[in-house]
Image 1 (cartoon, rainbow, N blue to C red):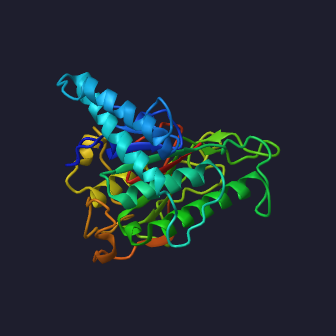
Image 2: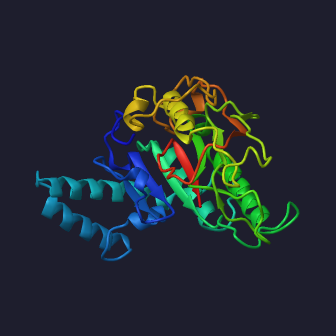
Length: 314
């Protein structure tokens, strides 16, 4: 959906926490990626004078070029200036405390960009480490418990940091695949069905949506939890609520949902740019901070289409 809204800035779609642009952001529209906001600085030295000299030199070289390369260079210079200025003031608000690690750093950067109101519409994050073939643990301790706990703390800090700006942010988690029902000893192998989590603005939270197929042998598919909901149906509802001017048929060609899940409510300020100048006085309904879960929404297929803010699990 990048390029389908009225915004015309390279940072409309961005990947944080990783320099490799994800497949979900690859296309004719511009998108950017970086591990952290400070990485958008220009080469040639980190101090202010060195950055100014490099910017002047590149502007002199490309500033009057009307070619596609010239336009791309000027866009890169604009992005660099915007993002590095945000990095200087990247301090969490409202007492938010992010956990240590890549996820906390990426979400903190995302919150900074959103609060600044610089035209971002979609932020993607990749957070791996979920492929637990061994040492899965129990509900009391282990890799899964620790990792889920880390995600919970990071997401809580993210929405605390956003404050009232969070009313205009919807966060969705996705995974390319689920896990097997049968353990392999101390873990589980790749499977089909899993869950999606939705947080924030517009979400009908506090409940589980979707059809639970059951775990009896007759309900499983090759030993896996059956997929009962197409992930595109969930994302289509998010897009329709957050970006009503965008056709979901253009985002998911050939896809038609069987019936609405009802995961989103209408947004009074859908698709509006989040700005610190206006976020404190908006009249949109408060964001739901209670997790909303849509069951069995994914499969081994690629779940790469972005929404407002997306945390993709591997």
